[in-house]
Amino acid sequence: MGLFHREKRDCESCGQTFASYDEMVNHAREAHKQHIVKCSECGKLFLHEKDRLHHVREENERKTDVRRHKFSKK
Ligand SMILES: [Zn+2]
Ligand SMILES: [Zn+2]
Image (cartoon, rainbow, N blue to C red):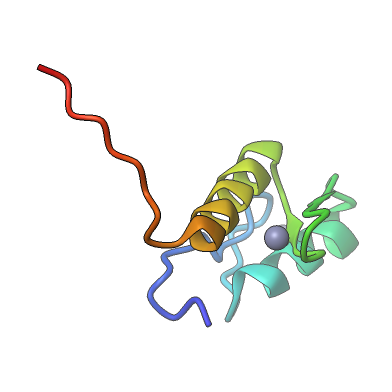
């Protein structure tokens, strides 16, 4: 999952690159005591609130799937 998802995988504090976003978050939490936010839906961890919000939005989009309401304005 998330193979085509371009996530940031390098640590903001020391620049180290990780195999996955989750590994990077775990590193930031343990090595730098960075504040982590958690998705209440699936438990995924994020470095920033904006990252979590972006993820939640994607999750919701996936839920509503193809039922996307598009209003064309003229
Ligand atoms: Zn680091
Ligand atoms: Zn989630």
